[in-house]
Length: 383
Image (cartoon, rainbow, N blue to C red):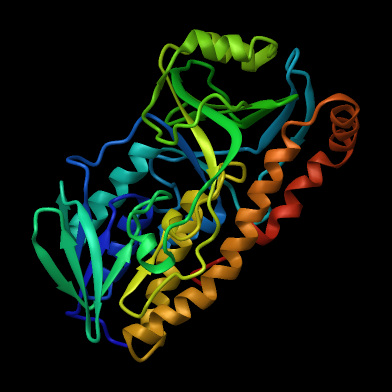
C-alpha cells in the first residue's frame, strides 16, 4: 500500500510514538503527534537499547554506527549484595552491543529527526477518545477539537487511556515490588563500561553509566506492599532508600550513598493486550504490552513495533489489513519477551540456600548466560 499523502495521528510523544511517526512520515504520510504534556521532558533516567532496538534506530536514520549520545556497554557484572563480591560476568550479546542512553537524549534525537522529516508535533494535546468510522479514525481532544485520519496509533504508555477502547476495563495486578530510580554525578571513567546487577534477598540494584560516564543511572527494586503509586514522578526520600538497602555494600553501597534526589514507583502487571487494533486504531509500545523492567526491553519492543507497523503498511493492500498483520506479527513476540521479564523478577531476589545455589551456578555458566536471550537481542525487525 502506498501511504503517501494519507493522514495519521499518533497519540503519545514517547520513544515508540516518535519512532512510529518518523517511520510513517518517511513513507510520505502526513503525521500529527498528539502529546498531552506541555513539553517533551523526562525525569532523569537511563535506559538500555540492545541490538534489536539499535537496528531500528539505524534503519530510521536516527543514529549511525557511533550511536551518537549512547554509551556502548561492555557487558554486565553480577554481584552479591553484602560486599559487592563479583559472582560472574556476562559478555555483550552475540547479536551486537547494548547502548546506554539517557532517556532525554534518545527522546531528543527522535524528536529532532521527526521534526526534520516534517512530522507535526502538538504539545498540550490531550486525547479523550478515538472513534472508528468505516474509512477513518476520529480523534477527539479534550478541547473539543476533532481530527480525522486514515489511522490512529495509540502509543500513550502502560496506563494508556485509549487501550480500554479495544479491551475494556482491566485491573492491573500489584507485584508487591517497588522501584527507586536516580541518577548521580560520576567520575569513575572506564575503558569497558558495564552494567552492575547486585542481588540480595528480596531486592536488587542495577547501575550503569550514561553519556560520557559523567552520570551513573541507578534502579533499586525491593519487595514491599506499603507503596502502590505507579507514576515515575513521585519523589522519594534518599535516606529512606539507603535505609531499605543498608545491607548493600561494595560498589552498590557507594553509589547509593551519593543519591541526593530519587523517584519511586510501584510495579504493576498488565497483560499483553488481547486486542491490539480494530482496523482504524492500533496500540503500540507499552500501551499494547507493558513490561516489567527486568529485561530492559520496554523501549526496544516499542521500536520493533514501529518498524513492523510500517512494514505491514508497505506489504498490505489497505490500512485494515495492515493493522491486522501488525497485530498477528507482534503479539506472540511481545508475550514471550514480557514473560521473560516477569521470570527475572523472581531470579533476582532469591534468598537462603536458593541464593547460594544460584550464585554457584552463575559463577560457572555466567559467561554463557547471555546466549539464553539471543532470541531477544538477535531479533531484527528490519530484516
